[in-house]
Length: 313
Image (cartoon, rainbow, N blue to C red; front, side):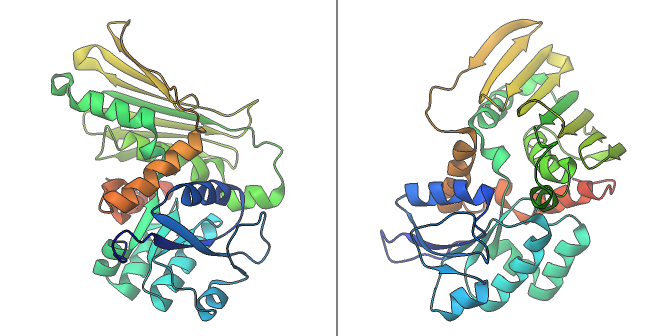
C-alpha cells in the first residue's frame, strides 16, 4: 500500500508516460491536495508538466527523485517490464494502467520474481471504469435488493471512433478487445463472477465474447468502427423482473422494473467522464488502497479472459 509520509504531507508521484491517458492522470494528480507531482518520464513526451522531466525511469531515480507512488501510463506491452523495474529499483507503490498484463503467465512471472506479498502490498491497477459514478450507483442499488438474486444477463457494449487513428496509437492500444475488454470486465465484476468462456471472436477492431457466470450469461462487445464513442451496460435480474441500464458515456443509469422506470441516476457534475473515473481511482488509492478494484487478483482474472482461459474468476 502507499507509504505513509509525514502527517498532512502529500504523496510524491512520478508519472511515467506522457501520452493521451497521462493527461487525465496529470490533471487529477495536480487537482488533489494529497498528491504532488515530482517528476515525469517519457523519451518523446506528448505534453509538458510542471515537474522535472526525464527520458527513462532509471534517469529519474538516478537524479534523486524519491516517489511514494509511480504511475505507469504507458502502452500496454510495456506494463509488466516497467512494474518489474519499479519493484526492483525503488520502494514506491506502483499504480499501473489497465491491463496490468495480457497473460496470466506475465503476472505469474512478476510474482515469481518479487513474491506474492510484494505484489499485494505494492502493485495497484487503474481499473478506472469500476470507479465511475454510474457503476458505483448501480452496484449499491443491486446490493440493496438481495431479493433480485444473481443477474441472469450482463451485456457490456463499447464503441470507439478509432477506425482512422494513427498506427502508433493503434499499436499502443493493441486491439479493441485488449483496450475495452478490461473496462467491461471491471464493470461486470461489480455484479457477477465465476466466469467460464463460452465463445470468443476477435479482430483488431471488434470482438464478441460470451461467458457463463454464476447464475447467468455475460456478453461483451467491442468495436472501433463507430461515428463517436458510446459505452453502455445492461444488467438483468430475471427473478425480480428488473433491468439496470447504464450509459457510461453520460454517467447516468436507470432501473426498470417490469418495463417501467423505477429509479434514475442523473449526473449534474462538471467533470469529464475520465476525470470522474480517475478521481475515484486516486481517492481509493489514498483512502482504501486495499480496494479489490485496484488489486492484482482482478488483473489476473482480466488477463485470464484476455487470453481466453476458462474457467476464470
